[in-house]
Image (cartoon, rainbow, N blue to C red; front, side):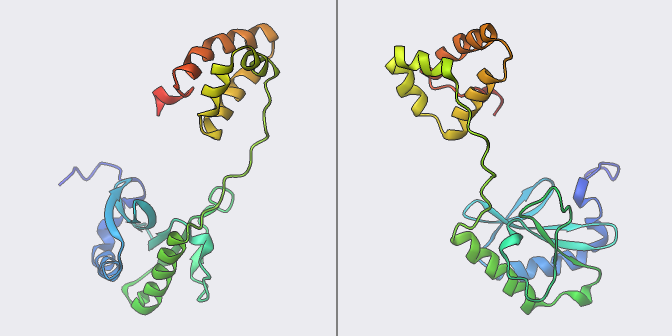
Length: 195
């Protein structure tokens, strides 16, 4: 057992809902989801994608639907715990064992799995496109650089462009370009070493 003083974050109160969470687990076990542990609590995945999680809180225990935004929610069970922050995550809260309705819960979970199979996700909002005239000029001079740059995902291309173009002065931009050219040619993303 781990020391009681350890803060388990959002699963801090799981202990007081042990029986209830086991009931929910038994329901989830009837589906094709696989149980894993992430962020200190049970998370159920379909082909490595997070579908639902369970958590115990002070006044309630809950099922998290990672892409809950796509659920029809005909029974009006789901809430967005943080309006501004979470786009996709939805919570179904329970205050007692009596509120656990297996049939309803299974309906929601099966719908969530189906959505996952269809690949429904919220696309991150498109960032402004950044153009770096200076880098483009380098690529014209050096076709190998252009070819190497094209190999990066749009996200990693964006990181390079953002890094160059956030410099205020042209000479700083040029020195940043000097710095990234070898990385681009070596197929190393700007932030790879932190990933």
